[in-house]
Every structure is written in C-alpha cells, then in structure tokens.
Amino acid sequence: MLLPPYRAMFLGSSPIFSILGIPFVAELKEYSAYRTLSYLDVEFISHEVMAKFHQLGYEVKKMKNFRAAVSKFFALLVDIKSPNVILALTELSLIYEEISRKDKSSNKTIIDALNLYAEAIAKESLGINTVCGGIENDKS
Image 1 (cartoon, helix red, strand yellow):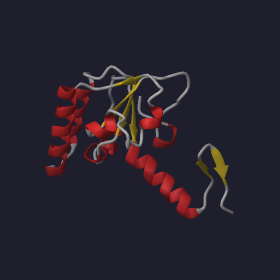
Image 2: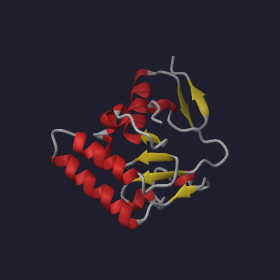
Image 3: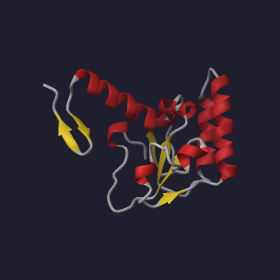
Image 4: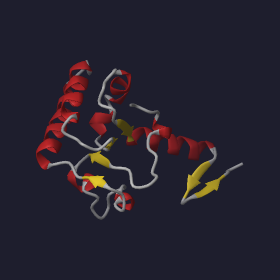
C-alpha cells in the first residue's frame, strides 16, 4: 500500500519499519535524522540487502527510463520484512513517483523522506501551519 507522503506513516504503538539509506542514516547513528525513532521496533536491513539497494541507486543515476529500476526495487523489497519502508536514499526518491504508480502486492507502505522534507520546507517558507517540536505553529 502506498500512501501520500504527508499521510505515509502512523507512529502509534511501535510499528515496525526499516530505513533504506547509507549505513550512518539507516542504522540510526548519532547524527541520523531518524535517531529519535530508535525507541520503535526498527528492522535493520542486512548489509548484503542494503548493498543491493545502493547498487540500484547507482543504476538509477544512469537511467532515463526508470521502469527497470522500479521492477528491481520491488524484487529487492521482498527481502525486507517490515511493513513500512522509509526511502532515505536520494536516488531511490527519484523513482518514487514510478514506485507509487506501480500496482503491487507487497502490502508495504513506502515513505519518501525527500518529499516529506520538501513539503515541510515549502510550508515553513509559505507560513502555512506546521508542527515544530510537537507544537502547532501558525505564522499568520
């Protein structure tokens, strides 16, 4: 199941999720933007599987037609057990639109972090209601 970026993940009672990104980010190291989520039940993707996603990222950089990359993405996705997958690898964000259009049966929620960041920055710069540190902030 693919949801729009702004509704992508419900952080209720410890959902299981994984992060596709460089090891420093995906393993929730000290400066990872996702480190605050470490109290949740996180699936750490094996280095072998992560290397395959990184290779796919390199292939995406060279591609003009992303359909082949999308097929590879879903083939690799079966190696991830968690129902929620955060794309924290910029190259994979490039194929998110194609991923979100593809009919699939993986039943995973794919969250594109780049879209979330872009939306938050746009709202902040336009003075639209945002949530900052848990406090709603109206700039008007």
